[in-house]
Length: 91
Image 1 (tube, rainbow, N blue to C red):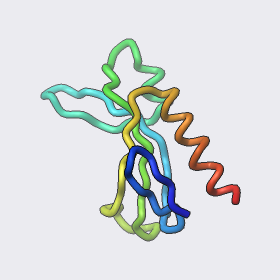
Image 2 (image 1 turned 180 degrees about the vertical axis):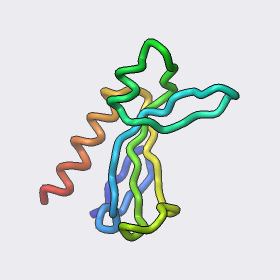
Image 3 (image 1 turned 120 degrees about the horizontal axis):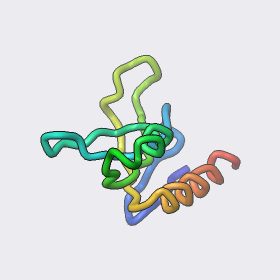
Image 4 (image 1 turned 90 degrees about the vertical axis):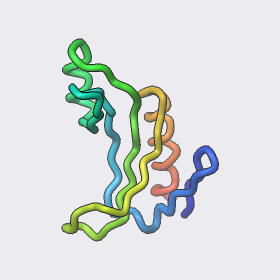
Protein backbone atom coordinates (compact mmCIF):
# COMPACT_ATOMS: atom_id res chain seq x y z
CA UNK A 1 0.00 0.00 0.00
CA UNK A 2 1.74 3.10 -1.24
CA UNK A 3 0.24 6.47 -0.42
CA UNK A 4 1.42 9.32 -2.66
CA UNK A 5 1.17 12.98 -1.73
CA UNK A 6 2.84 15.77 -3.72
CA UNK A 7 5.10 13.26 -5.51
CA UNK A 8 6.30 11.73 -2.21
CA UNK A 9 5.61 8.05 -1.56
CA UNK A 10 4.80 6.58 1.84
CA UNK A 11 4.85 2.78 2.19
CA UNK A 12 2.00 2.22 4.62
CA UNK A 13 2.81 -1.50 4.99
CA UNK A 14 5.99 -0.56 6.86
CA UNK A 15 4.52 2.09 9.18
CA UNK A 16 4.85 1.24 12.88
CA UNK A 17 3.63 4.57 14.27
CA UNK A 18 1.54 7.26 12.63
CA UNK A 19 0.57 10.50 14.33
CA UNK A 20 -0.30 14.12 13.61
CA UNK A 21 1.50 17.08 15.14
CA UNK A 22 1.60 20.84 15.02
CA UNK A 23 4.96 22.52 14.54
CA UNK A 24 5.41 25.64 16.66
CA UNK A 25 8.12 28.27 16.91
CA UNK A 26 10.13 28.21 20.11
CA UNK A 27 12.49 30.84 21.52
CA UNK A 28 15.78 31.02 19.70
CA UNK A 29 14.29 30.49 16.26
CA UNK A 30 13.90 26.73 16.58
CA UNK A 31 10.73 24.73 16.15
CA UNK A 32 9.14 21.84 18.01
CA UNK A 33 6.48 19.26 17.30
CA UNK A 34 3.59 19.30 19.75
CA UNK A 35 0.27 17.52 19.96
CA UNK A 36 -2.68 19.08 18.19
CA UNK A 37 -4.50 19.39 21.51
CA UNK A 38 -1.60 21.27 23.12
CA UNK A 39 -1.29 23.59 20.12
CA UNK A 40 -5.01 24.34 20.25
CA UNK A 41 -4.91 25.04 23.98
CA UNK A 42 -1.92 27.39 23.61
CA UNK A 43 -2.87 28.95 20.26
CA UNK A 44 -2.95 32.42 21.80
CA UNK A 45 0.64 32.01 23.10
CA UNK A 46 2.47 30.13 20.34
CA UNK A 47 2.88 30.50 16.59
CA UNK A 48 1.98 27.39 14.62
CA UNK A 49 4.14 27.30 11.50
CA UNK A 50 2.60 24.19 9.93
CA UNK A 51 1.22 20.73 10.62
CA UNK A 52 2.74 17.31 9.94
CA UNK A 53 1.65 13.73 9.70
CA UNK A 54 4.57 11.68 10.99
CA UNK A 55 5.24 8.21 9.58
CA UNK A 56 7.65 6.14 11.73
CA UNK A 57 9.13 2.99 10.22
CA UNK A 58 11.29 1.71 13.10
CA UNK A 59 10.23 -1.28 15.21
CA UNK A 60 8.04 -0.39 18.18
CA UNK A 61 10.18 0.07 21.28
CA UNK A 62 13.17 1.45 19.40
CA UNK A 63 14.06 5.11 19.18
CA UNK A 64 12.47 6.33 15.96
CA UNK A 65 15.18 7.38 13.53
CA UNK A 66 13.59 6.27 10.28
CA UNK A 67 10.66 8.60 9.74
CA UNK A 68 9.05 10.77 7.12
CA UNK A 69 7.01 13.87 7.74
CA UNK A 70 4.20 14.88 5.43
CA UNK A 71 3.95 18.67 5.74
CA UNK A 72 0.57 20.41 5.61
CA UNK A 73 -0.10 24.15 5.54
CA UNK A 74 -3.25 23.95 7.65
CA UNK A 75 -5.07 21.69 10.06
CA UNK A 76 -7.85 21.23 7.50
CA UNK A 77 -5.35 19.91 4.94
CA UNK A 78 -3.83 17.64 7.61
CA UNK A 79 -7.25 16.20 8.46
CA UNK A 80 -7.94 15.62 4.76
CA UNK A 81 -4.66 13.73 4.38
CA UNK A 82 -5.45 11.70 7.50
CA UNK A 83 -8.79 10.69 5.98
CA UNK A 84 -7.08 9.66 2.73
CA UNK A 85 -4.51 7.56 4.60
CA UNK A 86 -7.27 5.97 6.68
CA UNK A 87 -8.90 4.68 3.49
CA UNK A 88 -5.73 2.67 2.76
CA UNK A 89 -5.84 1.06 6.21
CA UNK A 90 -9.51 0.14 5.75
CA UNK A 91 -8.68 -2.04 2.72
